[in-house]
Length: 627
Image 1 (cartoon, one colour):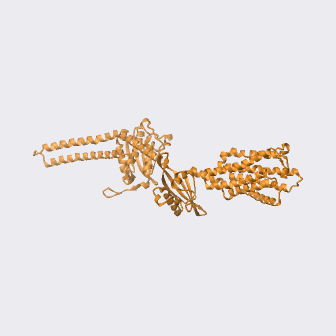
Image 2 (image 1 turned 180 degrees about the horizontal axis):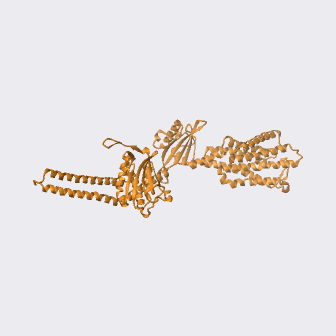
Image 3 (image 1 turned 180 degrees about the vertical axis):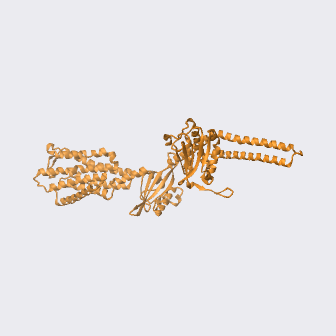
């Protein structure tokens, strides 16, 4: 039977388990592994309580002794199952192992049913006794015993293989602690079953004290068997491509497998060695990545804040060498406001950089295509615009030639006075002035066309006034305005000369021309009319807009404007205009485009440019600007 000192030990353990159960039940939330450990504690507590009851029960009262013995099987059967379930949850995750996790309790439930119904079938005991030498077990004892050994051995194998597979000192410690808690009852149970009769029946429950103690220390004191470490690693692996953990002195604590493949194996970085040991003075060129990391760590230490930088690393994929790019974040780890280490996170941005470059190239091509398409549409109007000054120049030259001939033929004529020659010269001067005006007009057209023909990726940032912007657009759109029977007015024109923007005027001319072209197309449908260019300040933005009195924009179309390529011109439109214009305004001027209904009918399309990109020009007495 149970000796007095063993009963004392059991009583102390039982009190501790009772206090632990009360404390656990008061907790608002228990992690799954904590619940499983609570299951071990409860089943083990029932086991000990039943053994104590057996000690203080009359040895002649075999019925009560059998009842208390039946209670012990709650702990005997369920404790190993709970141990295996903890290993399954920790190494595999409960969501993946839910069916198997529940299945581990089938045999313990069956064991208790058979024990409590033993007088009917005698599968557990053929002869029951509290004296070990007098007990005769039934055939079921072999199944329950094998299952107990299976649970303990399987749990240890799962933990050991998990630690080996993940190759981490953290998991190695978990493995040792868990295995120790399973190995002690495994050995003692084997000796109690197959060993000499002198081994008391209390040896097995005493051995499970090691299981409860090791698991309890691991879960509540060292947090080794908590699900938090494995969850943290999974999260880090998910949100990062590589990570490295260092002590405050630069000792390498741990890192994941991708870091080992890309950095550690190449640069000689290993756990339990200082990071600085992996580089020497002669390694500067070969190990720039490590030197950059050491510099960032020192900066992080001094600033006590996170440090980020971009790191390029050459890698081989088969026989092909290429460069990968990583955003590296070095973050200090503080415990009780004291620097305790650093975590270094690497995020692979190689594909992102490639995609961004492809997007930029694609946008450049689209802008170039739209610009060329617009120029193609505009060439007919430009030809018409140039024809008028050319014809004017031709007429002026003919008139001057007639005056020259008249002047030459009158030489020696006494009736022709000096005043007559002055009148001829004055008339010739007027014709020359008209030629100068026509050539200046042609020069303006050529300048505007030349600027619009410049490729999108060769844009040049300069200072220009709103007046220059509107003037170029008016000049280039003159023929299209005339063809659409439209006239152009400017609101706020008196201020347009004083407002200076910084950027490529050709980009903004393209945007404004696109808005004007859309307004002319809309205005044509109502027989033409007035199209207004407006300039006004609205809060922190300068607004430049084009207003028409056409049929307006349908709500379903308005929702998609600037977000995708959409056109209301049918086969006459590409849908690129507003989409590219929005890209230009955002990318080149930091602004945005917008659209709204015109209260007088029609639509208003415009752009809002931050005032930070706008300045006021100062004019001297002669009207010239002083930048």
